[in-house]
Image (cartoon, rainbow, N blue to C red; front, top):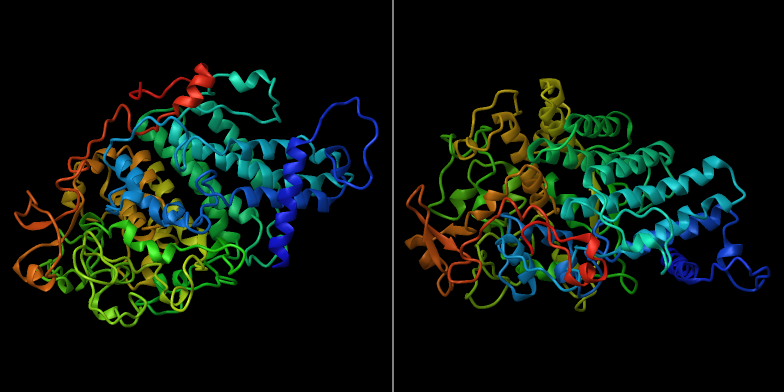
Length: 591
């Protein structure tokens, strides 16, 4: 409680400083209250100010970088879990997730005002820049000041990179503005120029942040290892974007991504969570409330009753369930894609889907035999899976219930909207994936590189190792990349499902056309029709196999998804912002 009160005091202080008078003719200041002129003195002052930046970043739909579950009821859409609804991983049908459906189907509307996770949050940048304009006033060492500058610059660079990923060119601001500042009405900075500034912020952060703030990471401040992990993520995006969309020097960005990831892998105190149990280790630590001391979790957000809570566990039904496309990407236990493996049993029955598959599948999607173990749904005693139309319990649109993050104990006996499910913001497993992909895209990956990255993830679940020349999955033969990159991308999809990556990954790989495939669910044969009596579904025939599956969006506005290559890789700017500053100009295709 003390820590949260401290942060709240900090944000109140920041609000005052952001609105305080800057007139230089004032010569005397009250001695019994805080002012901008008297505040910036000690290291503690800088720490308190930066605490408020973390508080501002708690509003995930405004500042979607340290992305958690948002607060309270708004976690029904604000959670990073739900970002996969923009992609082919999930099939949300709930009206509250219409925005996800619009983007997924290529029918995003030009908004009047900023949308969720969109063209908003600029007050966060202003707060950072106020700090940057004042940190040097403190009578402390340059080394101490640089720690807090580095913290602020990491947040600023991350924020701007996220905006570049969505909108391309951005209005870069790096000093405090007032209502008369000409820069308020300036044109957007070209994305490559803006990303150079992002890289400068990231480099400063990885140089000056401490390896350990001494806060125990329970949870704590962003340290140098977190900064390196963030840098690996952002540089990988930029490098692959430039490689596949066109742009200067993609190799530099990919090399920066690989180097940052390798530093974390070689020298940080983090490692994969692994107790030696391949049947539980993948999701065990994702379904508990206290992540303190977990070796894999680099940055996380704590939720605490009476202070900051969510209701995210109760809204898994809003995801619509996982898709057939996602489920089919899990390899067979021989390490081969299901299109090539003799071990794959098919999907005639629901249980067949799980037979001889990567153990992560059963730790991601609910197997009927695991219902009691997971106390699904809050140990209600029903048989699962359950499909929309069936009475009672959790239902899905696809038939594939998500179990990866499910924690019944965070709902049983608790009042509505008081859940404490934590948010994992950065984990070591992603760093391994970033490294392998960057090295592969550079064309310089070795078997040794795979063994210290992808194959550590496979070891955790007792899967065969990835080699440099895997067979090509026929489903991806026309993607224009090597079979090795296909498998690294597959590993990323499987490992990072429901962690907010898939939509951005498809965009940076220039694979938006994959979003034109319909979202299908489980096989809808005579056996399943009888088994799931009462289900209300539409179906379609898979043109490749002739088999019939649930077709989630058939008969809706999202039945025929499209992806305009000249438009949909970027989001539209809000009309209100364009009216206030015509120099911003709308992104192509949205006029």
